[in-house]
Image (tube, one colour):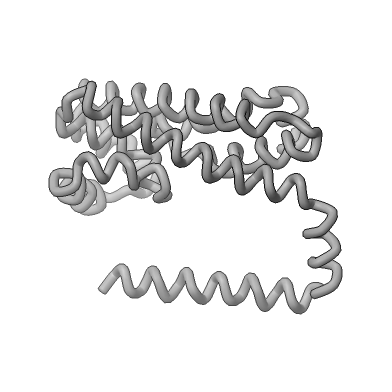
Length: 195
């Protein structure tokens, strides 16, 4: 079953379900699902506000589950499940250190960072961050994230004929150059982050 068939079956709920699974600490492409659900809604003249609301609700609920798991299971749980996704103990230690220094900001920023979006709520639970404080920053971050990602997807879906025409115009070679440039930038950033 392809993504289109899943979206046709689940509709708006796909946005919330993907966000919930990822927020609960499972490596899952929640951001891609939200983006795709918003594009699906635009193509069908659906509601952007509904996609944002459902994505926000799923992300918030998923993060609450992740927080609870981190609070109850602590570092042993995170290390055990982290190893399944090739997250090494030193990654967890660096994340803990970052979280200890920037707890509130980390919750806000983690929404927009791959990896931290999945593990940020567990780290907050492990650190025994007060739940009300976690909930406040989690809700603000989830709403901002859902609004940005869903809006981008909706814009993409609403302009699909134009995007298709542009891609046809630049051809495979032009598209390959754009992809190669994006990959080069990603590699440069990764190397700079390692230093």
